Length: 595
Image (cartoon, rainbow, N blue to C red; front, side):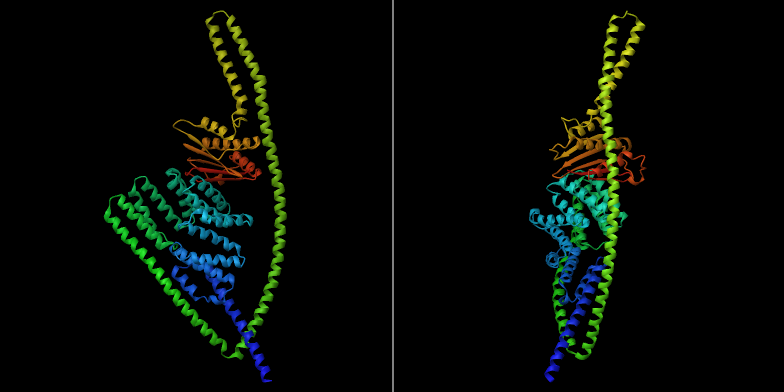
């Protein structure tokens, strides 16, 4: 009897220990989630303190991954990744183990970024980014895709700057479409940096940095403002005006943000020191260098403190383990009652949770079915609208060709015959002065009419001529539209080695022609650039002008019929059409068509 009672006590104790561990694990997991929710609002020291409070031994695999991820972010945001990579690699492996692929792919991008800052070559970690992009496209993850394109473009800035700009433009459209405002400001800044550092095009650099600065101020993104100021200062130094760079560097100290702050300030003092040297103010240069060393010393102190904290954390963890073991052995009967009650409560709560979850799931499925039906109807209507537009455009093209042929074959030949007959008549006339004047005027009018008819008849060949193709046609119209010393129209083709179907070339030419016409009529620009880029599966068109810009939302439909038709035609070709314009800042129009 005594042995039997002893056996029951062991069973009760085991159950109590299991329930106790479950309660501790649940409490720690909840504390970790709360810490994650307020992570971005906390300062570095507070983040470290919160991490030390967590008892990681009771974490699930997914919570262990999150803990490593937040530990890495804490170091990463403080000093540009020092001590962070080890945490990120561990976190990625744990996320993959727990099948949380979203988080694993995010860390693939972060790890690639860190390797970019080290001695690794792009080809050594390109697979991480390719994997993240493929996953984001397959699973419709626009934020992940935006982050991946930002990193890919950053890796191409030095070796392939024009390709980097193209990648940045693609990512920027994704960010803009999905309202990732901070990503959008970073894309503009990176494009500006590429123009400044790699292409030495300071005009375009200022344009894109200006876009970034305007958006950073709008969204109160002070970290972004600081980096734009640094690049504006860089332009002044490259232009040989270092004195204008100093105030911009100093402005960054007044901006409030935590990320990389100590390293950021150290770098600013390095830039100030270099700039003062360029101005031959060696006293100020040395003063800035001393301030930089103080910040570098602070970073080193932090690394030493981190080692000490890790030792203390291990000691504190061991103390906690001993305390927990003591608690488990005290007042077994009371603990059994308490833990049993907790167990029943948890089971009841879990049952209620699953019932509510099941009801919510059914509601969600019904809502999704309703949205799918609504989307199907919307797609049918949209297809009908696009077909009608296509018929109209096709009819217009046929009508233009018919008019051109009629003018050439009928009216043109009549005028040519009339001119010939008139000349014969002129050769037989008497030498009368008044008659001579009349003949001259009439001859001029007939010649003018004849030339106009020829011009109209040949208009059908002013665009895409079968033997030439899209690029020569665009170059031809650019040449005609350019005005010496007033308007420069430049055409820049990249990889345009293949010909498209005639219908595609006609459509693309008409779009470019319409946009150029609008720029000349309304933008008051002095420079227009048409970039045509062809890759394996798409053609990308970027038309930029330095004109007065406009607010696309404020254009009435009647005034913008040309742009509306282009938008719908691009949609019909399964492409994307974006206008990037601000009043007084010029206009960039981007068209992407899949092949």
